[in-house]
Image (cartoon, rainbow, N blue to C red; front, top):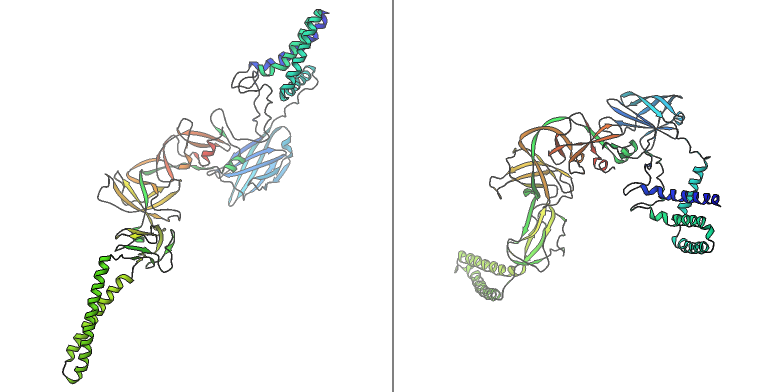
Length: 561
């Protein structure tokens, strides 16, 4: 009988070994002493570079994918002619829809080292690119005749099915099974050891997957399958590997740095204001009630108007006392007009006989005309409102007119602005190089070119106001917008000018730029920068001239992990 215990004990040891092996893992690691990570092996590739171009060849599935870029800017070259001397003979590459070039390469499916010579002709330039390709041996297939490996795989498969199943039926069935085992042990004491081994086996199968699992891990998590394509990733030394196809998607562009002497710049707060010569305000000279023009509606915001166009009317109010005085004055004028009219009529009858001179008749007529004009002016006060007209051509920028509203003298009713003629008013606290143009940066990163127009001689809050005209103002620009003006100082400095998009923030807050050190390799460089203008910064330390620095796509590269 003792010999019969051996198989049961072996089964128990096997089950405990399968579930105990992940227990060595601790929080933050995969189970196993050295769990293999996902495959990061790249496809066989080679690269070559000349003064004008850079060529990368990638072998995959019996074909070569060729990526041709300009050496200085990393811009794809899609109109070139590429021929190759391959181990199978000469061949010509075919342009592909993604901007690359394709070339059949059946020889690349066999392991070995291959030398391929490419000839590239683009425009009036022609270069030779020798590239070495190393195709590694494929990994050996796993052995399938080992009995222990087969048993281990079967045990892992059984464990996976248990973990994926609903635990409630297993709990109920296991409890019943254990109860039966306990009853059997009590009734048959001579076979306690095999029964005890069976109980331990059931407990290991039912409880071990949960007992040995750690926080944030599952004992049965399958290993990641190897990737079938090259992926961008950050290397252990901090550099970033970015395959050429990914660079095309991210539109990565570079520039070769060059040292230069530039003027120091300072950032000034500013805001958009209208050009005084191309803008105007509409105000009422007298107080009165607003009314729309003959069209029946006030001009809306953004409506373009012409100089002299009537925008609104103002009807002066007439008080009750004024009405009484006007009526009394009208009565007096009417009485005087009636007397003068009778006098004129009499003079006309007597003038032909010589009883009245012609001079007396003319004076009476003139007096009658004056009284009639004064009477008509009184009527016009209540009948003809004041017309508010546009002083310049432009667009309605502000409007506060409402039908029936009382307008006060000197209060703005409309503001008219010409959108193509805008200025920037900045406040300077430093001595600027007067007469020099500047640039401005909007909140969304867009830049404006500014022309210096003049500076004030009187301080405003201990600052000097400066005016700049916006060159080619975009149509969406609005008056009152705040901008950052970058103006030149008298002092000069030496450095490397780069676009602002080249500088990104590292994990520690340090300013970084990415240097293109190899066709598919980018290395971060810590730099110290100062503002140069709205679109560029000046790198004063960290990199040397002649380096290829990323100017577009740096923010996306900085997110690769």
